[in-house]
Amino acid sequence: GQQVMQIPQYQHVQEGEDFTTYCNSSTTLSNIQWYKQRPGGHPVFLIQLVKSGEVKKQKRLTFQFGEAKKNSSLHITATQTTDVGTYFCAVDSNYQLIWGAGTKLIIKP
Amino acid sequence: EAGVAQSPRYKIIEKRQSVAFWCNPISGHATLYWYQQILGQGPKLLIQFQNNGVVDDSQLPKDRFSAERLKGVDSTLKIQPAKLEDSAVYLCASSLVERRAAFFGQGTRLTVV
Image 1: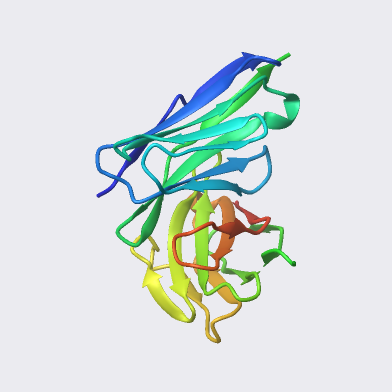
Image 2: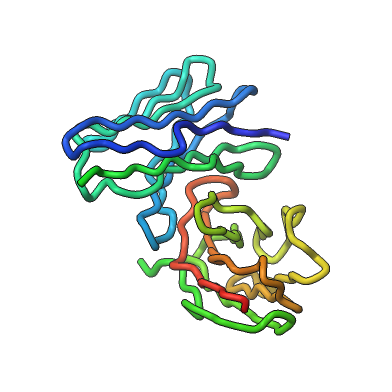
């Protein structure tokens, strides 16, 4: 069945540094969704990408969908403490939403 | 707009006991999901409803888990009997359209001792 690989599992950054997480699929995706889950919280929908090569921005967050629609990335510029949490991608496959394992963003003290 | 409501927020039970969780989705959302999230892992879909019909329950341990959404609105998820490995957060989510943006409730943290 469809699997989605999300890397890295963890990323430690200094506040102010950038952060990127990637989702990769072996098959072409119809769309991809990104969610953020704060520690102790529930997943919160961030965005959905549908078009090949699509780039969307939300303030310091930049989301990209690959030209082949097999991969996607979320990039955060100049991280802040409010960005701490786990970022998940989720892909649409065979009437299911398949979730990546998540990338945990940790801000070094 | 009211969000997804779940209750209870926390539950502690002994193994072999039964437990039930309740979810009220966002008004008008036809699709309702129950997820299990074990600490440090991503959400795992247990069951998906479209209105009051089951779309996908392939990962629901049917020998002990059951779920219903009788009137196509709120839903209950039951575990009977509970095992230690059922300790997790149970998340309910709803979406306006199937497999599109899902909005989650706060979850129920279940501890089985």
